[in-house]
Length: 478
Image 1 (cartoon, helix red, strand yellow):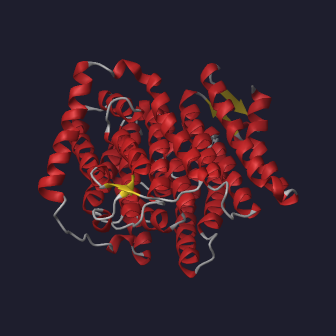
Image 2 (cartoon, rainbow, N blue to C red):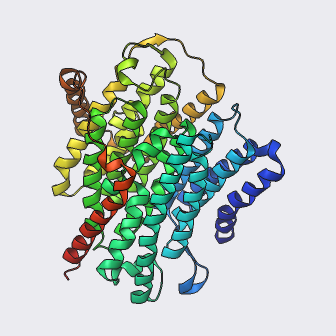
Image 3 (cartoon, rainbow, N blue to C red):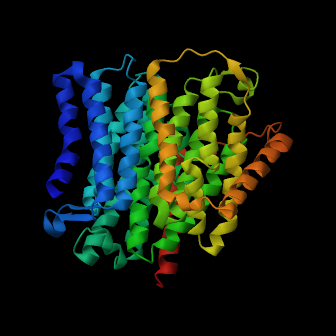
């Protein structure tokens, strides 16, 4: 298993360069890498957890277990769906090479258990994501990509200083070093991860970046890339008890912030981007079951972005008067049902499992976030149907893969299907739909975007750093 793990991590980077030598095989090699990760993830669930310490305290520590298995499987399925979606497009070998390099670096982030290896993986992710965002080479795409890269690099500078402080206290870069590290180390590292993961106000770079990228890139960013910042937070919360309350607090905060913006948003891609912010909060709110929620969210959000890309308009007001092709509407409704927590799709089991692992002080806030999710996706569910659409065959292959995954993932938590567990989500959805028809469908509110502006993003990071310092000192008793 050790040799297989190292080969699996190295494979995407090797084939990423091979694609340049054999460009005619670009999509076949990329798809092969994605399905290799599917096989590896399934093997992870069957094997006991594995920890590799390759270069002692100064080097690489890899940990692969059930938690990382969920994140790896998410990355594999979403990457495969994006490749299928682009199969008959005019994407070049450069696009597929960067896609699987991004895939490989995200996999590496999900296997890392030390701060320096994680830093390297996150930086490679930033470069590959930057190149994919800028792929159209328009002025707008290049600006959005540079904005993303700048924010990401500034965040990782904070992270790197924190990693050095952990080593100074623990004489290793292991995540476990956070237990004895000073509060300032915790604050600096968490600021970097919160920003990379698109969490709370430090993640307000995300809506513009995800909504303005090309459809397949948006699916990758929202489905898996932001989870490279979320996964270490979940891992640290499970390893270090003092960190768990901080992670849960930010989970609640980001769930409410994202859904607050989403219920008023009239642009389809921006609404989905804000819901990425919100749904990441559900992963952090209950770290012990965060892996399953990450899998469910990755599949459904990627499907929603791919579907949004073939709708006749991005404006929800216009879509209310433009019928959607019935097959596309059915796919949109199924994905919307899943993220709302409707039974028979894995979003139901993920929400029930998360709810059962919330602390008492989290319950009310997370129920409000769930209600906001139902309100938001009522905008999609009640769109008119019956129109015509011309989509490429790759679209249906991708959507069937993702929605099929949502159906099959029900087996993970089939115990959720009890009468009591079914009634509550259905009641929440019904109340959300009622609120949509009575209030939000006719409400026109434009929320300010001041905190999303480039010149304010670094200032917001500073405010979050102050908050993290306060939380760190408070919970560590200093």
